[in-house]
Amino acid sequence: MRENKSLSAWRAGEQTIGCWLSLANAYSAEAISRLGFDWVCVDLQHGIIDYTDLATMLPAISTSDATPIVRVPWNEPYEIMKVLDAGAYGVIVPMVNNREEAQQAVSSCRYPPDGNRSFGPIRGALYGGKGYAQEANGQIACIAMIETQEGIANVEEIVSTPGLNGVYIGPADLALAMGLPVSGDQPQEEHLEMVKHIHSVCQKHNVAIGIHTSSLEYTQKYLELGFNFVTLGSESGHMMKSAARELAAARGTQEQKRESTGY
Image (cartoon, rainbow, N blue to C red; front, top):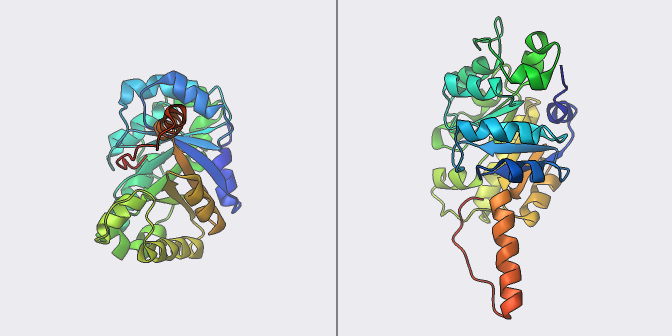
C-alpha cells in the first residue's frame, strides 16, 4: 500500500507544512498540491465543497506527492467512511468533546477488529494500491480537533484515546470556547498558553499536534514551538491576500482591511 508519508513523519517526530482547500475546484486543488506542501486538506466543514466536488479534487491532488486529508463536516461514521473510500489518507474530525467521541472517530477509520469501518474502498484502494485492505488501518490518519469547552476540559482523555494519530487546533473556535474575541490568528497570551497546554499533553502521549494558521508569521511561530503539522493558510486566503496587495499597489492606495473568515 502507498505510504502515508505525512503520518510517517509525525510518528518520527518530524514537522510538516500543509495547505487548506476551501474552494470546489479541481484545478486549484491540483495547482496547490503541486507546490510542494507535505499535505493538503479539503475542508467539507466550512469550505464551499460537497462530496461530489471531493470526488474530483482528490484525484487532482493525487497528481502530486501531497498527502490528501479531508476535514469532515461532523463526527459521523458514514461521513468519515465515505471520504476514506474516496481516497482520503487522513481525516480531521471537528468538535471532539470527550473520549467516547474520539473513540467513535478512530473506530470509523479502522477496519475490524480495530474498528467498525465498512469495507468498500472504491477509489481508496485504487489510490492506495496493493495491500490496502490489510494495511489501511496503519496508514490512515485519524485526527481529532480540540476546540470546545468540553474538549479543553477532557484534553487528557481525548489525546490518550488508543488509535488516535493526531490532534488539530482550530484557533478561532478555541478562542470562542475561552470567551475570547475571534481574530483568526489569535494574539492573546491566554490563548497561547492554552495552545501550549494542549501541545504538552500531546507530547506526553506521543500524539502528533497540528494547528491552523492564516499567515506566515503564525506558521513560523508554531513550527518553532514544535508543532508536527501546521497549515500555511488556504488557497482562497492566498488568492485574496495577493490580489488585495497588488490591487492596492497598482492604485497607489492603502490595502483595504477585510473581515477575518478563518482562512
